[in-house]
Amino acid sequence: MNNPHIVKSYDKELQTLASSVGAMGDFAGVQFADAIQSLLAQDSAMAQRVIEQDRMVDALRRDLSAAAANVIARRQPVADDLDEVLAELRIVEDLERIGDLAKNIARRAITIAGEPLPAEITDKIRRLAALTSEQLRNAIDAYIAGDIEKARAMPQDDDEIDALHGDIFADIIALMNARQMQVIGLVHLLFCAKNIERIADHATHIAEIASQSVSTGQARQSHPHA
Image (cartoon, rainbow, N blue to C red; front, side, top):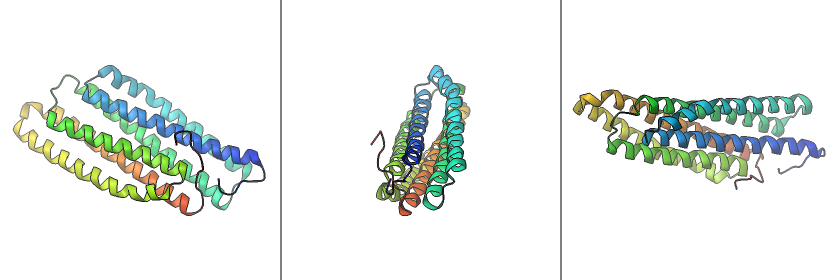
């Protein structure tokens, strides 16, 4: 932190919150990666694990929200300190939504596990997921490390994700007309692609919070993943 407090335990509490946000971001990222793997590999067992582990994301959100509320109640932070805690609460909400979207992908993966998936679509979904995973990792790192340049560059990356999602949408609609027997599977792939795009939107929102946080002097100085 830029301005250490006289009460060092207060600094430690704020640092612990920041590190816990990073850990939750890691877990949400793994959930998303596993959901995509279960979809593309048609691995129902892995998909079921993603669904079951979503409650761990929810538990992390509850624990972090409670910890943040405890800091506010006991320390009564003002100005930048209060903004810092509130920003972390906003990020936690984004991460919980990412976990929910990963669970939705896993559920669809189970539904279409026995369906033939067109390679031209799955290849693009794989690319879309890779870009989105990188977007999420960069967003968390930008916030924890206080990297305002990385945070500000992310909307440009989101444009690439949006364009690829648009391509996938058009391709799936075209295939629906040509392959009537595969319509159900294609509809699920369409929604999976949309969920991935929405995860990227949450990552971009985290980056926006990072940019705002750093610009008001709330840069993080360390992160165990840095």
